Amino acid sequence: SQTIHQWPATLVQPVGSPLSLECTVEGTSNPNLYWYRQAAGRGLQLLFYSVGIGQISSEVPQNLSASRPQDRQFILSSKKLLLSDSGFYLCAWRGTGGYGYTFGSGTRLTVV
Amino acid sequence: AQSVAQPEDQVNVAEGNPLTVKCTYSVSGNPYLFWYVQYPNRGLQFLLKYITGDNLVKGSYGFEAEFNKSQTSFHLKKPSALVSDSALYFCAVRDIRSDKLIFGTGTRLQVFP
Image (cartoon, rainbow over all chains, first blue to last red; front, side, top):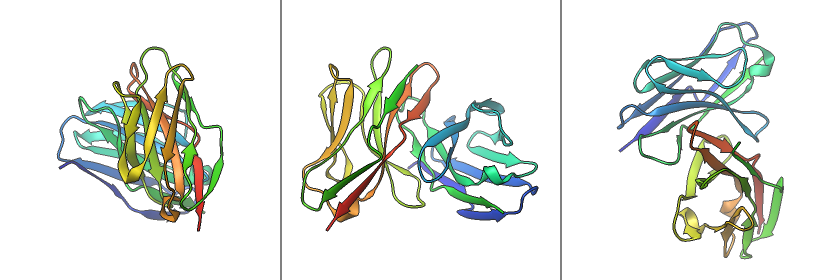
C-alpha cells in the first residue's frame, strides 16, 4: 500500500538558521509531489510541486526552496529562516491516474 | 481559474443534529471536487470526491456531499453529528490543466454535546 512519511513532526529553529524538511513516499512510482504551508491553522498555500526528479515548480516567491533528488523524495529547504516561515508544512502526493491527494502528517515549524 | 469558496468560518451544531458545511465552486469544464478533514496538528484526511456520476457522493465516517451543478455547490452533510466530528473541513477543486489541488479557506465545525 502507498504511504507518505514526513519528518520531523515538530521543529523549533532560531531565525537565520537553515531548514531541511523531508518527505518520502512508498508503494508508488513517479508520483506528483507537493509542499503546502498552513498558517494560523487555516488556509493552505501551495508552495512547490514536482512532477519528476529534478523538476520543481514554485508557486510563490519566498525564502524557501524545494528539491527532488529521488523519485519518491521531496525536500523543503531554507538557507536562513525568517520569523514569517513559521507554520504547519504539509507534504502530499498524487499517483498517476489518481484524482485526489494523500497528505503527510505535517511538520509544525516555529522560528524563534 | 478554478476556485472554491467556503462562506462560513465556523459551523456550530448540537450532537445528534444534522450538519451541513457549505462549498461553492467556480470552474471551467467539469469539476473534480473533494472534501478533506483536518484534526488538530494533523495532516488532511480524504473524506470524499466527486468526479462524475451520481450527484450524491458518500464518503468516510458517514459523511456525504451533494453536487449541484445549477447552484455550483458541493455541500458536505451528515445526518447526525458526533462530538468527534469537530475539526477543520476543507473543500477543494482539482485544476486539471495545472494538476494542482486548490483549497477553500476551511470551515471549523464544532459539535456540542
